[in-house]
Amino acid sequence: MSALLDIRRVYVEPEARPLPRGREILGGFPGAEIVEVESHHRIPELYGDEANVACWVRIKTEALVLGVKKSLTARPNGRSADFIAPSTANGCAMACAYCYVPRRKGYSNPITVFANIDQITGYVRDLVELFRGLPNAKAGFATKYVNRDLLGWDPQGRTRVRFSLMPAADSKLLDRLGDTLSAEARAQLAAEVIFLTHNDRLHQVNLGWHPKAEEVLWRPELQQAKRSETGGWNVRHRNGHKGGYVAALTGLLAARPLFCRIRYAF
Image 1 (cartoon, rainbow, N blue to C red):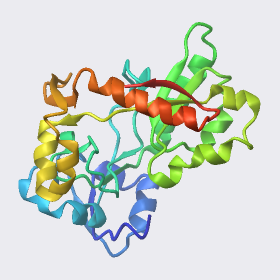
Image 2: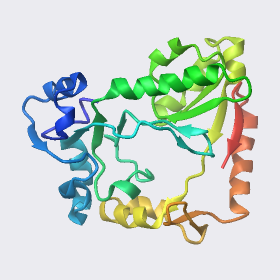
Image 3: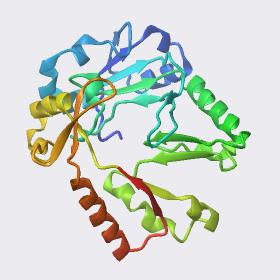
Image 4: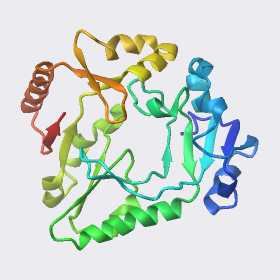
């Protein structure tokens, strides 16, 4: 990660500075300029300036936001997970053109870290313990990274965690797991395949910093419009097309059998 970041400016909420995690993070960047902000998600020079699109990658490299997570609630999801747990951080040092986060963040997407991490992980652990004792329900969470400490929470099979196998280095994980996992663990593994949707606002942002990618992502001849739950216009594969893509995928998997089944593809 240090090879990706050259933090020169840290935007800090006042409540985050005295917390142990806040002090630890600020201590890691002693030469950075400290800019105090009222709220981690309302920083006009980062999120409201359209000119920042041209500095997309540089802002990710040089800026860091340190805040306090205010809402410790799990939002109902109803799709690939039952709930979306409160995050310990958001943003990313990478610059994947298909990433949906910029739809909400505006014209830049630096890493935001929350200093009250103990409150957040404690809340999630409470949920895991709750579902451990419910005989007729299971919990599901989606994440990009699995904290190994979760393995000690003893969910007793009542909590499912979905995590990403991207980038490519991680996608080879299944090739290495076959001989190391127990039969019980292998039986629980299932892949979820997501065929990406796109968004009109994200399309406009991407045109400012990565127009080449939009030649692949924005394909009106292959896509159809869909109104999102938040009111924006998304595009997805046209009816009939996705079925062909799923068939091609399952054909590839049949040619190279894996012990991991496909839970669903959408």
